[in-house]
Length: 464
Image (cartoon, rainbow, N blue to C red):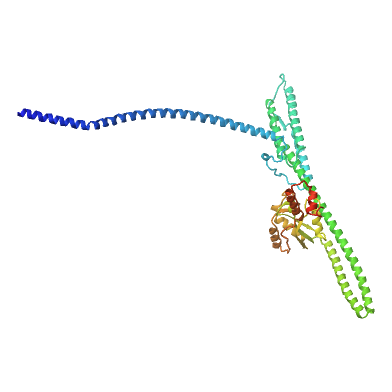
C-alpha cells in the first residue's frame, strides 16, 4: 500500500467519524429549530389573542358606556318623578286631615298675649289693614294698562273686575279655611292659603294681575291669631276649671272643718257636763264608789282634752290656707310603673281626696306612697312640680300633676327640701293584680264558663 492509499483511507475514516458525530448531535439541532418555531407560534398566538382581547374590551367599554348613559337618564327621570310625586303628595296632604302630618312640622307660637281678648283685638287690626289695602288697590295689583277696542277706560274696568274676582276667590278661600282651624292643622291650613295664593297668581299671569305678598302675609297673620286665640281661650277655660275645682275642694275642706269643729264642740260640751256631774258625785261618794268616780273623772278630763284639741286643729286648718297634705300616689294598672301623681289637699281626711280621684276617672284605685302633712303644703307641692317639670306626662297642660319619675327621686327631693316623710315603696295595686290573675286563670280554663262564673268560683266575694 502506498502513501497515497494510506492518506485516502485516513480521510475516509475521519469522514465516517464526522458523519457519526453529526448523526449523534442531529436531535439537538432539531430541538433548537423547534424552539425557534414554537417561539414564532407563541408570538403569533399572543398577537392574535391580544387583538381579540382589545376588540372585546372595546366592545365591553362601549356597552358599559351605554349602560352608564342609560342609568344616568333613568336616574334623572327617577329624580324628576320623585319630585313630582313629593309635590303632588304634599298638595294632596293639604286637603287631608292628618294628625301625624310630619312635613308641616310642629307649630311654634308667634304672639304672646296674656288674655284671649288681646288676640281678637289684634286680629281686628289686621282685618282693617286688609280692608285698607283693598281700598288702595294694593291687595291685588295690575302693572299693565290694558285697552279694549282702543279704550283705556274699558281696559281699567275689565282689570278692576278681574282683580275683584281674584280677591273674592282668595278671601272666600281664606275665610273658609280660618273657620276650620284646629290645634292639629294650623300649619296645614297655612300651606293651603299659600297654595291658593300661588294658584290665583298663576291664573292672573295672562292679565298681569297678582295678589301682593303683603296681603298674603296679613292673611297668614289673621289665621295665626285665630289659632292662638282658640288656644288661649282653651287655656283660660282649663284655668277656670282648675280654679273651680280648687274652690270645690276648698269648699269640701271648709265643710269638713266646720263639721269636725261642731262635732268637737258637741263632744266638749258632753264631756264637760259629764265631768261636772262626776265631780259633784265624788264629793258625796265614799270607798270603792269614790275611787271609781275618780277614775272616771280622769278619763273624762282626757276625753275633754282630746275634744278641745280636735276643735283647735279644725279651727286652725280652716283659718290657714297653706296647711294641708301633699300626697304621692300611683295607679299601676292605669298608668304603668314610675308614673306618680303629686298633689295637695286641705281636706281634714286627705285619704277621701285620693278615693275620689280613683272613683270614676280611672279603672283602678290609687295607691298611696306618701302622705305628708305640712304648714307649707302648697310650697312643697310647687317645689316638687318645679323639680320634675321636664318629666311631666302631659307637657301641654301644667295642671296635670302626673310625672314620669322614680319614687326614689321624689323621696330624695323631699328630703333635700327639708321635709320628713314615710314612704311605701311597693304599690299594693290589689284590684289590678287580681285582675291579671283572673285573666291568667281564664286563659287556662278549657270549658266555656263566663267570667262572672269563674270569679264567683275562684274569688268569692270579689265582684264589686
